[in-house]
Image 1 (cartoon, rainbow, N blue to C red):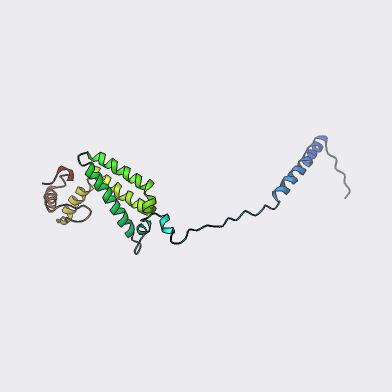
Image 2 (cartoon, helix red, strand yellow):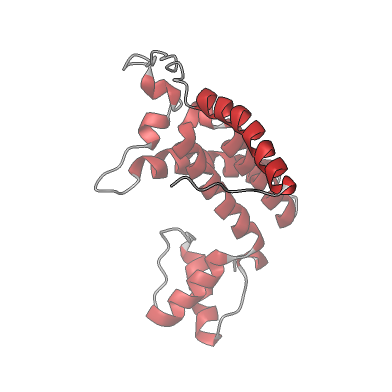
Amino acid sequence: MGEVITLDPQTMEALAGVMQLRSPLEAALAKFNEPKPAPEVKPEVKPPADVAPMAEGIAGGLASFELQGLPIGQAAVGGFVAVMATELIDGFLAKQNNLLRAGAKGLVALGAMRYGKGVLGSVGAKAVALFVLYDALRDVVPFDTLAKNLTARVSGVLPTRGLAQGSVREAERVLRNAQGGIGASYYQGVV
């Protein structure tokens, strides 16, 4: 039990160094383990119930209306605003090429996403941007004509209502083209 261990001078120096490190290390650990003051609790401020819908824009409440999960409000608000915007662009730029109209509609969609949230709410602004971008794509790629030609070939009937609307004369022209194959473009004019 009473054995004496002799250490060489290098080991003694190393142990002395460890002992010197021990006191700063203990001080750091003691400081780390000190109880911290409780964080300051700030009261949560909620707007009154009648102000909350305004936070999502004037039309935000209508745009978020859903029935059985169907986004009816988005379709109504987004569709109406998008149709108004695209019809104005098509009216003002009627004599311009399709790419310029598509570019203008792309800028309107970007503006709807950036600045329309205050009026339409985030849901309504996104719906407007989606509808306007689709119309911009229709200016560049004639989705309407492609859809009409494909449905005419499959069903033999071409409705004049729906997303790919047209006149009865246009329906007759598309049906004639469908009988001979997918052909004439919507932008080539109506017979």
